[in-house]
Amino acid sequence: MTSEERLYADLAALGIEYAAHEHIAVFTVEESRQVDAEIPGAHTKNLFLKDAGGVFWLVTVPAEARVDLKALPKVIGCKRVSFGKADDMERLIGISPGSVTPLAMINAAPGSVTVVIDAGLAAAERVNVHPLRNTGTFGLAGADILRALEHWGHEPVIAAVPHQDGS
Image (cartoon, rainbow, N blue to C red; front, side, top):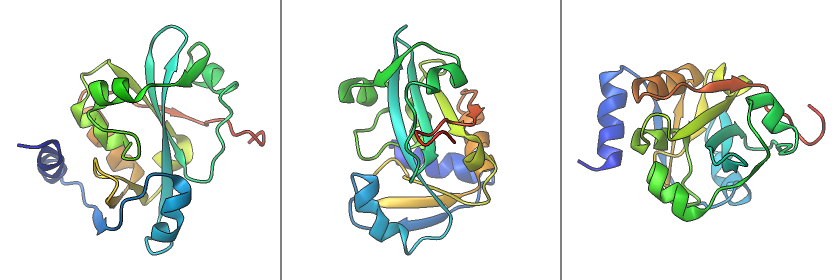
């Protein structure tokens, strides 16, 4: 069974409803804007980070957010962060850049990557994320993303992720 097949099976087993959309491959938030215009709900971007202590983080924020990477460590409880490498991403969460999604945590060993979900997204009625590939979008409730993460053995951190504009 592929990771995507396991994802569909787990969402069904958990009774998680989602709206699936197929579209052209998008690799950046900028490229996804045209696709996003057709899909209702909160759109996301994901940052795969590594802190100075060697801990990996997957941070999911609203697509338009400009995360303040200097202020983020204090909020989530870690040391200075930088972007993680593609080979670490593929090794730990089983996907490549451009397809990053909190749903990729289905592939991650518990404790290998800490997931941070922006508080606004966690409470949102509909959050749009990739289904392990960048040619599709799933729209599901923020609470259901949290349930799936917990089902896979991850304890997501819900945080008011700091933005560069000070919000």
